[in-house]
Amino acid sequence: MVIVLAAVSIIIMLPQIYEHAIIVSGDSLFHLNRFYETYKQIKTGNYSYFQTLYGFNGSARIVNALYGPYLAYLMGFFLLILKSWFKFQLVTGFLLLFISGYSMYFLARKISIKKAIAVGLAIMYMCTPWVASESFTAVGAALFPLVFVAGASMVNVPKPVSILKLSLLMSVLIEVHVFTSVLAVVVLIPFFCSWHD
Image (cartoon, rainbow, N blue to C red; front, side):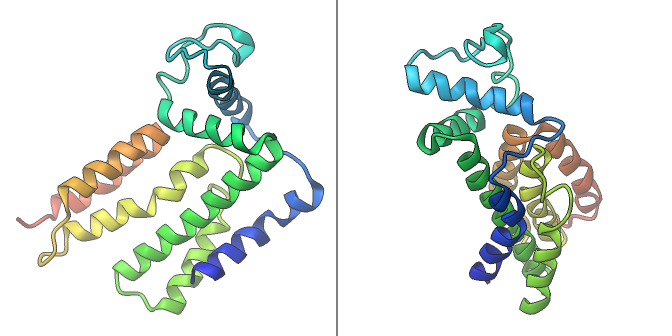
């Protein structure tokens, strides 16, 4: 299953690999500026948690402090290691595709769907526009099936949801993509209403 999901991730990325191109979507420049900022801070050792010193034309805007600072520093570290935007997009794109496929597979298995069908669902999810794109919504979408895993656990009386796991999931979603965390709350409300103590 892992090999299949990895192979599908590579197949989806083949046009970008073949063209040796960077994909710029609607919000790409905003997030690339965020990651460039943290990359330069790590590279120079000149850290500023609040103000942008390098990205956004060094305009001292407060961006990363309000919009996933830890993810931004992780991405800046990736950029420092990979040394080019093309390699950065390939690695992060592959990871997002693979994680989205695996999280959907995990959800399908959690609700007792057969392995072969679960793999098929995972592949279909990986091919959806909000996952197989270079927009930042792909980051939240990669983890979104785990919200339904938590919801399924809420209605599973013998094994109720772990509050610690749910708190961790919501914390990660808030860190990586705020809108996805809002959607997660909306999705979990019906499950919560049917939750049995």
